[in-house]
Image 1 (cartoon, rainbow, N blue to C red):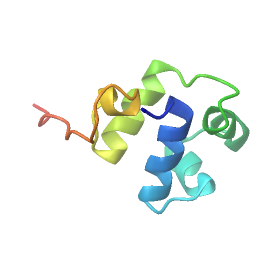
Image 2: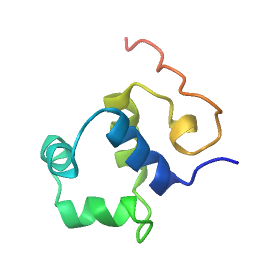
Image 3: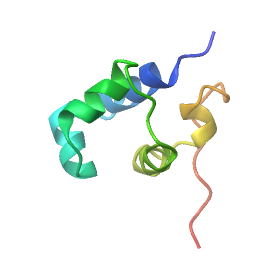
Image 4: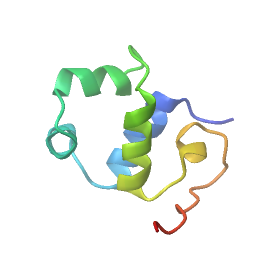
Length: 77
């Protein structure tokens, strides 16, 4: 069974040993907004999913629960 996006973004943050405070500082957003994403109260916008994929080095498919394991992003040109 695949994780929901809210569970996935929380797990990725925890795997990266980041607190919510540290992550929102890097992202330049309010903690309340990000907390709502992790708690499933709001869906994260696509732009944020892209930023998180780049930050954690995983594919967007993995964050969405469509890939069974983290797949690295292709090299940037």
